[in-house]
Figure 1 (cartoon, rainbow, N blue to C red):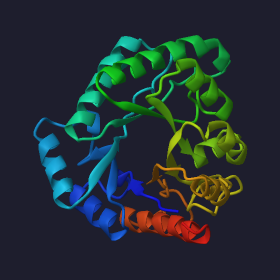
Figure 2: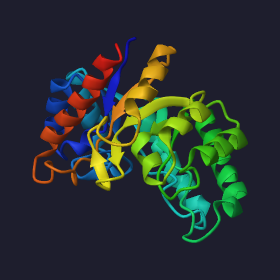
Figure 3: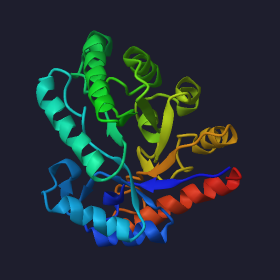
Length: 272
């Protein structure tokens, strides 16, 4: 059962040289590009784009996706502003030679029933998917806490409602746990759309992120089932271990290594 590793390298350091060193050390040859040198990828200066690309390519690291923040705004905010920002994300995807952009399905105002905003969310996500299609790009929706698609059932509503082949899912174990949705129940509902696993785990007891396998994300069972059934995608390390016991004052490279080793341990257990 083969697998491929990617990582959000900005969790290692803002310095791209340090990012690259630790990606290579851990056998991670794909970067989910979210930020570098203290800037979000959508805010890169013009000169940073070819420079960053060349430096990663020279070390043999390719770009798995653009880890954009598109859709991490309120559904009641004007959509035109976010659409223009999304066009920048599409430009970045082409500049960094990836066809994939991570997106979100808009924050729901506190206290509102998400169902009230379903039509507007689907309308907006359709517009993003349609524009991406004209650019030859694919979108991955992440189940972020507080957005419309933060539960498996609403993710299904969203994906079916948009009905675009270029809109698929990034399955985040920890985020499902945080909103009280069982990842083990979420997996069969979403497996047909999942192209990426975001590798992080959440402990309900500790109320914090932990290395995968040490929380309530059912990572072993889900990855075991996925790989056994010939799932093909990326396992993208996004550990968020800054507030985890034993990691608070340790540098990002140490935290990333701990996350990578925890994942590799699980993969070895399941025969990957």
